[in-house]
Amino acid sequence: MRRTRFSRNAAKSRPENPDSTDMKARSLAWLSFLALACPAIAAAQEGPSTIVATAVRQAGHPCDKPESVKPDAKHSTAARKAWVIRCESGAYRVRFLPGHGATVVPIGKR
Image (cartoon, rainbow, N blue to C red; front, top):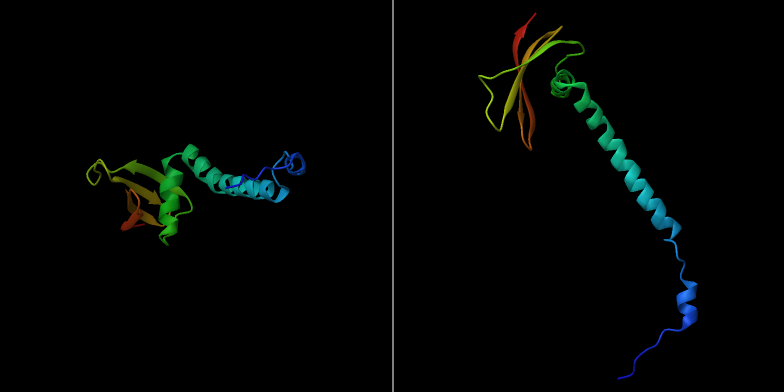
């Protein structure tokens, strides 16, 4: 069996830096990650009222101005946290289920 030997010129023809398309793909992936991660980080810094109100709106209920948000100890477990939120349009019980999102139940109208 004969061994193939690479010439020195072949090693020199390869660029030292990554290909520009590879660099663009990496940059695009990083920017996409930041675009998705930053709103979640910002929402976590704003507190539970923003997070719970967002869950209520995503469920299709109006809640532009949350008036109060309180933990609901009666309906909470170790794995499922529950909150009661009062908005200008009504009150809702929101349960956060790991891996499934939130369950929103209207509990009263104003």
